[in-house]
Image (cartoon, rainbow, N blue to C red; front, top):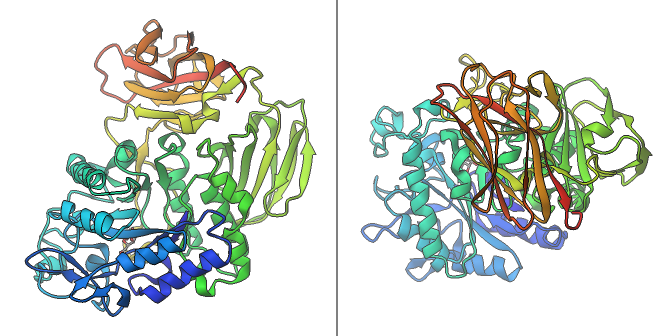
Length: 591
Ligand code: GLA
């Protein structure tokens, strides 16, 4: 949680603006509520000094950085640290940055020769990371990807001689055109440099490759947050896109590595003080997704009603809940979604999100919450704090663009255990079986893109289709094996391995088989359960149409369970399989 300069100021930054927002974070109590990171985004560089390569800060904007003939952010980070805050910096994977590629004028851009304007990490990883972390004392770095995307030989700024060409290896529009190993190689070096050059051992790495290059599958190996889409703008349509880009990735996040649908835009446009419904939705939805809560407004002038939104401690607690479960979609239509997020306390949070333009009367059921339908369920409204109790089902009115958000107390449906889909933060695909990443066609395609409505419109572009899902097949169907549907379970492709962290359960059981949605009717698959590396249970080979096999394993004392599915022969297509009703049972002590 924290604040970033980008949505508030773009590249027009200076230390008065940043420290002013930091001061309000402290004075308003937001720091005490958890907002700690104060992150400088693009726009801080003056140039790279030649020949020693040391980066120079814009002295006119950051006067405290001038120390004789050297340039240092140390006085700035010292100030933030003295305020009890942490400090974040920004760089790029390539030689040049996003603003250098995309901004229309060069007021805020680095100045000097072509080489002096190469301020990105490429070719300088060790030197720059040592400067940022060991020398200047930063705690967080966001690494953008424009330098690996926008400087092809044909790009106008390269052709005109402003920048050197760097063959693009990242393609936001097309996962098949990205060179995934090349992007990973860069992050490998950055990560190693962070480990080497960080005296206090405390850093966060924010990956900003916008869901490109199938980063969903590997971002967790390098960083702590990973952007799932292109930039948010202060428009409702764009919020839908950014929300969707993360909402079906519930199994691809866990403590230490989160989906990042981009920074908050509360304070501007569709999320300003005249749009409190939308601003509250934005906040509630980001909280449910376990998204980083990075305020993107000029806090020196933020109106109190918006301060109250980002300061809602009940909703912050949902976001920061130690169980680390991203919400799953319990109800999923184009105009209405119900998200459920199991909390460490055994309670759940539920958000009912009206995406559309008409008010709706929504049924919320015990089943959607995976609570018993014959025991009382209490909803606590996290805005009004009002409690209501119901059994089985209730009706709720949700205004256009409103998100109603509640903490819920009820009795878990499984008396003696928990469905794996109720703990997505501890069930994560190590290998998801996706061999040919494809764009997810369910992500809202907004008209609020960078080129307005010129061209043919945004195409599906965010790889994710076919990924592992809670309570759904990888392609969004209800899980079903030989005609039997499963409301709960994990849907994944064959040739996959899920890691399940166990905390005291004694057995794992599931109904396993090839999902009825599979196109391949000939090949068999085998399901295996491993406990701390040892094979505990194995199914017979199962083909499409064969009834589910009950598979269970004794996992008492096991800390890492692995759920593996192997096809018995080489399959050419991505084959959906289901771990129906997958659950951990018989806790040593209930959690
Ligand atoms: C990219 C990122 C943004 C921001 C800008 C800065 O567009 O996605 O979040 O950092 O670069 O230029």
